[in-house]
Each structure stands twice: as structure tokens, then as C-alpha cells.
Amino acid sequence: MTDIVEDGTIIEKAIAGDTDAFGALYERYVRRIYNYIFYRTGNVNDSEDLTARVFQRAFRHILNYDHRGVPFSAWLYRIAHNLVANWYRDRSRKKEVILDEYLASDFHHDYPERSLVQNQDTDKLMKAIRRLPPERQQLVILKFVEGMSNADIGVVMSRSEGAIKSLYHRTLESLRKEIEKIEDSNTKVKEDKRIK
Image (cartoon, rainbow, N blue to C red; front, side, top):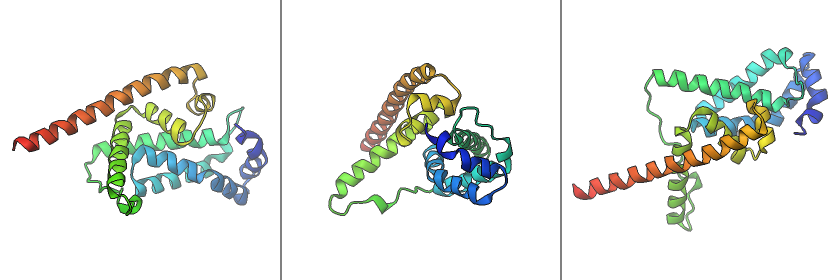
């Protein structure tokens, strides 16, 4: 990752208390961290809140950051991962209704059928991803959303590149099985409706 070289001076300034330097780090990474959190939670409001909390925590604890060859972005992803894990734990304690946030913003007026199918496929994939254990969700997001290499993912997840490759293959197999379960469930619901 080139983050280490590019961020070195800025990080040193941020550690020294330069808020403008921390602001530059925020600008550089906020979109990536938000995307990561959104793909883990699927909720815009919670993603915005959690992203803000990641950077608040990073700002409060920047003195504790010691890169030791690990990019600043990996440190941010670890903070985000921990906050999302806490969010899921807290959320499981209280039941809430989440409204569907995939409204017609992506709806193509030229070909509404195609848009509907794409939205259904995306929804199915997101449901399958959210059924995976947190570390596998993290791997999928870092690989496909952030476009990271296995080596870079290994740095973020504190694992060897070989361990990431192995986890990647197991994750794809689990994801395939989850999608099949969702499709089977949808087929059963349709059949039940026809019987009634």
C-alpha cells in the first residue's frame, strides 16, 4: 500500500496536534470508511453515524497510532470493524424496524424491468453477505468494494496473505450457499402464495 509513504508527514503532524493534518486524513479516507460501514450495515443513517464515530475515535487516539509498517487506513478499518461489531451486538439486544433504503434513486425509467431485476439481485446478494460471519463480511467488502489485494487485506485483518486466500475461497463457497438458501426460500414463498 502506498498509504504509508503518502501519509507519513501528515500523520506526524496530526499526532503533534495539527487539526488541519487530521482533516486531510479525514478527507482522504472518509468515503472508503463510509462505504465499508455501509456495506456491513446496509443503513445510511447508521453508516453516517458510525463513520463519524470512527474518525472521532481516531482523533482522540491518534497519539496511540504507531504504523510499524501498517498503513493508517488499516488502523481506521480496524476501528470501523470494532464499531460495526458493537453496533450489531447492541442491535441484537433491541428489536427495531428498518425501512428499505433502496428507493427509486437507481430506478431507470427507460427499462424499469431491468432496474427491478438488478435491485432484486443486489438485495439478494446483500442479504447473503450479511448472513456471513463478520470477518467474512469484512473480507468481501475489502476485496470487492475497496478493491484491495489479498496482501493488503491481510494487513487490515492481521493475517497472512495465505490465510486470506484460504478464507476468501471458503467465503465464496459460503456466499454461494447463502444465495441458494435465499433463492430456495423465495421460491417456496412464491409456491405458498400460489397454493393459497
